[in-house]
Length: 166
Image (cartoon, rainbow, N blue to C red; front, side):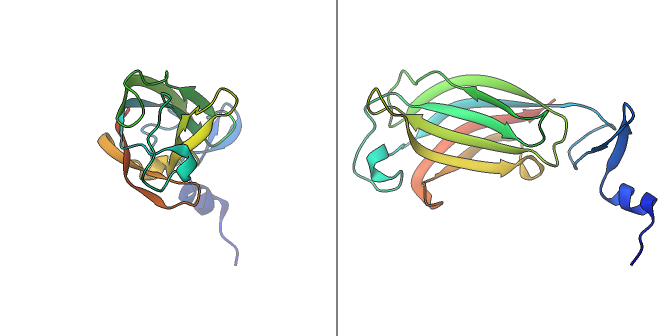
């Protein structure tokens, strides 16, 4: 079945920017506008120990954890930030740090959170993680559930965030 080029380009939101065809997802305001995603990592609740595989209860974190926030998408959008290690310990960690991401193609971008702890000086172990497409992102204050390495929800473990678009 033949589809006219104009219909195909309109449905998939392709635009000509600086003489090149570029894809734009559903979050852009004006044509070709760069979106700024602001992520404020406030705290983490009930973070489990790493030897439990990020899912079983019983062991607390003794070293201060940090959060790695990353936007993965087109080559121009990939950025990564890290919080400082929490000074309040591991079980109920507090960070209160803010990061800004410039996003050109929000329809292709995924926001990824990864909570990491260094139980010994040689290795960093992932406590929990969560990923969400920017198209599905809800703005405002949010509790984000953490998943273990098997993709299962870690009971009661969350990150408390504030998300906004500029």
